[in-house]
Image (cartoon, rainbow, N blue to C red):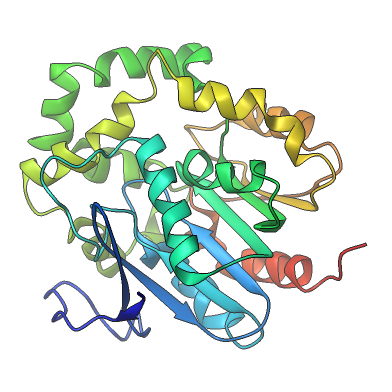
Length: 297
């Protein structure tokens, strides 16, 4: 059952920056940390890598005056448990997210996904069981990215032993990929860096949790293939696409593919990198506030 977290905060966590009540849900694989702030229509925010619910702090702070804002940390990320031997692939995270919703009894959600959060959260929208009533996509995907030659080359490099070394000992995801994905690196402050680096203090934690997601970009990719094959289930679902146009990883051609999958979606293009919610939070909040508060037709 959901409960308030009783564990002490880690030294890298600033409650001034993240002033939310920590809660936990016990699942078969381990304990998931999450925040659940405000009341009203429910907005579920699903993060990617190498981040955690901290990336949603601006949205939670502002939107919780009118919405119930729920933001979990995937297993191994943020303040959630990191059990040895657990499965940290997108499909496993997706299964646990479904269990999380069942534990909280959530339905009729505005689902917000970012980065790998698409592969993890979108199965909820494809189920068509009243779980998701609106969809917000931010610099994410629901297909096999290995079809992109640039991504395919990176996947070949990162998917093997050398990639595991880069992610573990080299801290590649946090030291290199995170800052280069910002269009304006001055917005990646020291405090923000500390909150993303803090959950992964050693090579073992990074290799255990972050590397499996990088490895999943290479073939085969049955989870992503299944999502793309089932995309017609999203037809008729009110959708909003918020896209950082200066994202070095997911270029405009990926936005075009989303527009093909969601032809009726409203599109908001921002002069931001991969994390619009970090670089342009006011614009993101305004778009979601208007979208999530609109009555369904």
